[in-house]
Length: 217
Ligand SMILES: NC(=O)c1ccc[n+]([C@@H]2O[C@H](COP(=O)([O-])OP(=O)(O)OC[C@H]3O[C@@H](n4cnc5c(N)ncnc54)[C@H](OP(=O)(O)O)[C@@H]3O)[C@@H](O)[C@H]2O)c1
Image 1 (cartoon, helix red, strand yellow):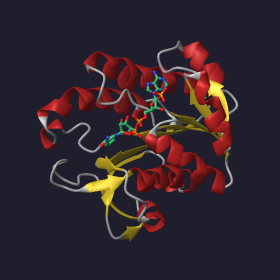
Image 2: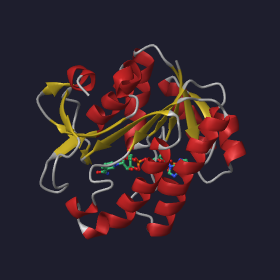
Image 3: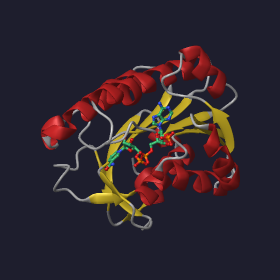
Image 4: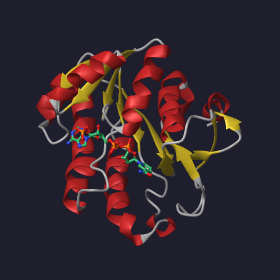
């Protein structure tokens, strides 16, 4: 497949590219800073200029020709609630609409545990979770072939290849963590598991091999 990664220069995005390539996909990397192009080429991805704050038509031009989009972007914890709404919520919505316009049917969203259930998260995360919830609801109503992956707190630990998944894995602070490396494997595995189309699930480090966990969704 031709897969477009959004946020390819992020911590999770950079781990995702080699997995997609190893799985036989061609990878487009949407970057807003041209200086990242060389790094993307070195990873084996084709850099494509694009910004989630651009118009739907501009994003559709980037998306066109791809079979699937994996959204691994985010405004990050260093920006305020306004950027969270601009990027995590409205940028995602514009991209989802751009995918429909460009007839790119498969959309995999990196969301977060406790999205849609802020009572399971500390108050400081509520604006972020509210923005992600609006975007996730827009995606699930879009008619696209979507999957929404909701990992818990992300770490930079190496991949274990083992996870646990459920609709609700509990309180985000107490439930445990998951590495960005395992999260990247989950996002890539969604492409190979059509049973994940139309599903949302939470994920944490666990005992089940990722392939088996995904097949069981
Ligand atoms: N941190 C956690 O514990 C946690 C838990 C669950 C879910 N998540 C979700 O996982 C996501 C990925 O996490 P991460 O740590 O891998 O992210 P990250 O390292 O902060 O990377 C974010 C990426 O998003 C890109 N981006 C930001 N604004 C953009 C825009 N306007 N247009 C296009 N790209 C834009 C960044 O591009 P630049 O390189 O140009 O800045 C960067 O590549 C988070 O954003 C969050 O939604 C996080």
